[in-house]
Image 1 (cartoon, rainbow, N blue to C red):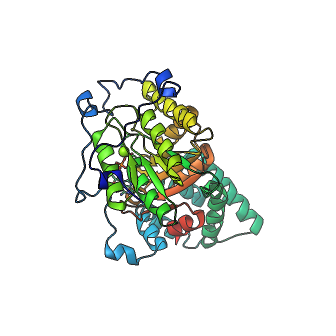
Image 2 (image 1 turned 60 degrees about the vertical axis):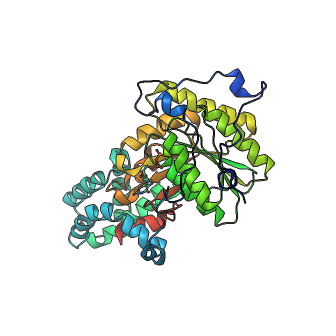
Image 3 (image 1 turned 120 degrees about the vertical axis):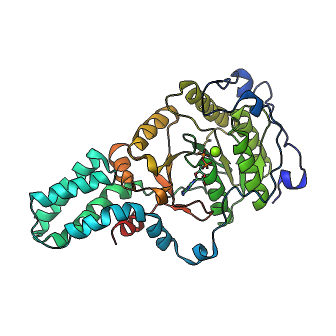
Length: 368
Ligand SMILES: Nc1nc2c(ncn2[C@@H]2O[C@H](COP(=O)(O)OP(=O)(O)O)[C@@H](O)[C@H]2O)c(=O)[nH]1
Ligand SMILES: [Mg+2]
């Protein structure tokens, strides 16, 4: 593999679309001067620079982290959610009669873990049914019933992303600022490389120079091609990246985009345009549109999922920062209220801290 930035320390071929390409037909949307998520025009106009390899875009996993298994790290990562629930669960499942008081405590607990009203009501109903069906009498038997009910609720979200049938397979990232899009792209590039896939990155966050540099630094260190542009058009960068991927027989394109809030309607229009232009570059692309959501925002996740889904038609989710969050229950809320396949979960800043979502592992890490 090769990297433009490694061998040619100058800006990559810029993506100036030909007249028949979409960007020429659709005038670029100008980033607003007042919005906090966009860089000032001065930064947008800045020249692409090479970031020294010493500036890490992603922390390398510490030796101790490398030794522990994903299951252990998942458990450690979910410790905040588990701590919040753990003691109460221990009390709840510690033995004694199953009565209305117990169900009430359980309800409070599920709501505390950010499962939301819909999922909580659903789970309680399901647990009650299991209790009566199996004739459970003691609260110590409730844990199994709750785990089973939770599994039935969230396991439909567990759907492996199949990247094998299209080449290049184009994955487009979306989300608010700081959700973890760029970091997740770095982690995913490594993940797919380790499976023998060739990867190309599109530095589609053209609003923040730092985002482009973050991606370029990552690409340079790991010998992955990064397509970047010094101008401000995300759609053109993605178009160029797909052309490059086709020409170079690349397996997977990971397209970064700038952060935006669903309420910033002009920016939501801009990302719809990015999708349309990707479609022009490759008719069936983007094959996957992933919303990256920060687990710390809890119930607000749902607002983001529905808004981005409406704008783009989401095909997948990445839930990042589960490690820092006590709101791991939000997965149940997503499953109940707005199910979108949860492709990956992030449980740390290291390069190996992103893996496909596995509902059984997740439930075990929460309860055991
Ligand atoms: N603890 C933790 N931090 C994360 C995770 N994913 C991303 N981050 C951090 O969140 C911050 C914002 O990430 P970034 O990828 O730049 O967000 P973007 O604006 O959506 O591209 C960075 O400091 C990342 O290291 C995660 O799973 N766990
Ligand atoms: Mg970013």
